[in-house]
Image (cartoon, rainbow, N blue to C red):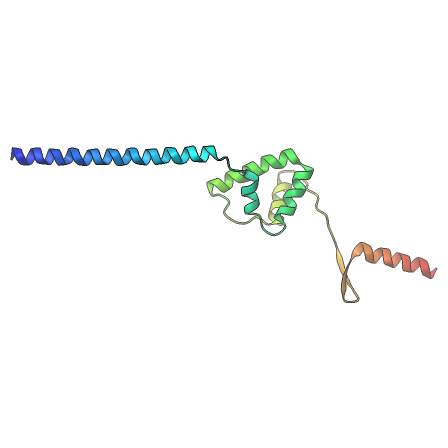
Length: 139
């Protein structure tokens, strides 16, 4: 029985050594992955731009031109939410504009109103200016 006990102890010791080696290898891989992530800083703005949908970039650029400091802070927060997985959908222009306005930034967007005239879409300002010039010609 002592031979079997010593054999069993030897196998246990061998298995323990293998497990410790596996654990140390995993830790080394985790550390190297962390150091690689630290070496390559991620650009928060580029990550946010990747998830923007229809007219999202237009809203972001307007916000950056009108409120550069505040927009940088908001971009950083959105980036954190993307990294943690809390935001996993595309942000279109409407959602982004609502976000900015909910935090108190009234981002102004260029607004165009088009009307149909003779089968073509014409901007409202053009139609009104043509209408006023036609009225002045008649008088």
